[in-house]
Length: 308
Image 1 (cartoon, rainbow, N blue to C red):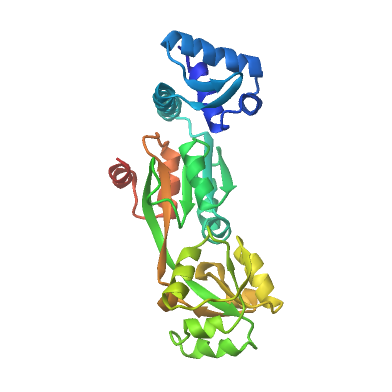
Image 2: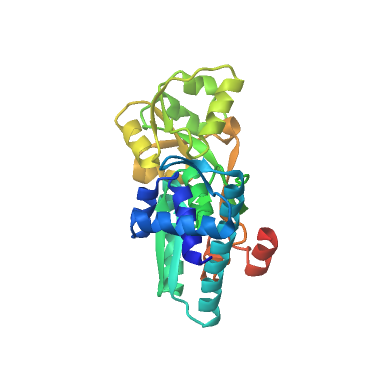
């Protein structure tokens, strides 16, 4: 057995048992991938894949256990590489942060600036995705850190901490009828909002589930005329008069956006942005530094206890 066989097996599973796609990702040939896995099956004396002719249908029961073991072995091999670089005193490397547009656009810029100043030799990669994709990236080892609101707390295979709490806000042009509520914070109601067409997030983004739940609990069916993953897009359509926007309050600068912001925490509750890592993954020193910049107070000792 060797690491290359485990690497090939893992990628075939990630590509939904498409060996051609796996070979393309691995920059090798399809016959080479097939041969490596067949040799692994021969050595273990078990069938890893259930086949129909040349077509792979999925994993056999023992194949599922082999894949789990291969995932653990590959993670530990990656951990050893990271550990050796840390103990060699080299701050170079890459930090891959999977996050949503809202976090990348409105929350992370100052953190990234400070991190880049402290670790100029580290390449920082921001991978924008929706929360389910972020979970997948972390579990597949494609990202070192994930930052999002939904999905991270209960995702299998991940460990997470809370970073900060935030609330939604309604945004309207200054001349809009709802703008009067800026003088009476907390008086805006779900019925007030529902009298207008609404523009807000797509289902997987930025606490949309809490917006839907609040309207459902009040037995109100809002008219959502546009959904988007990007707060800037939502605000643009509010500015042209399409409807009332509901966005994360952190994404609003009333003066810059020329919009009136109406806090909606009393309607939709609060949301918690979380940071997650893969369970068992070795975190290099600069990863701990990045986390502490984003979540002050979470030093290495406290993080190790939380992630244990």
